[in-house]
Image (cartoon, rainbow, N blue to C red; front, side, top):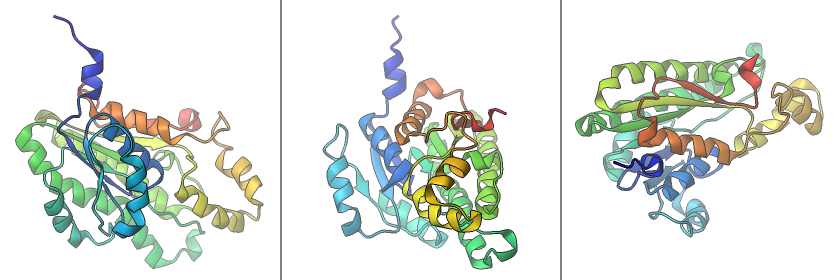
Length: 266
């Protein structure tokens, strides 16, 4: 009997994947990779269909089933039943959505703290809770939580983000342990700095709190902890996510996989 490694890696045909925050950055990269591996991909954000139309048009020129868009506000957890009702049963959930705010704890706005925890952490819990019954009924499921190097280590001025990402790792482990006998895996990917809209948007705040120029922030704050001194590429994260969804990753669960240029090695 010949075993094909490729079949175990790319056999996502007929699987439905939901990627939150999937219209740009890491989310879109992961969504695109899963599409090319044969999955039926649904991307989510709070944007309108008109705002996402150009993204869908471009990505749907690539190999794989047609990618579709399902809008929902990830800070409004009451909307999740409607979102999943419109999508149908989900085989692969990628909790990727995230926001950031950079400010000292003493000055950190209460509402911003709560917003970051709602979107970056609680949305992952509430979506996971809702997709698990269908996964259990089929004895197959893949849950990937896009965490961060900040799920493993801290940086100043990012208290809410660091707290949320540490929480994501705990949620990952608990989910994996509770469902290990049901063919369901749950893992966290922990990227270092990836040049995405989220990172670009925080550049001005970083300059303000550190009193540095943009170039100095990039070199001395963002890339300083990464021994490679290079931004992680979206495609690297997407490739890892694609592997975790395949059958060859069926024994990988409850883990936190770093892809950070060596940041957390020390």
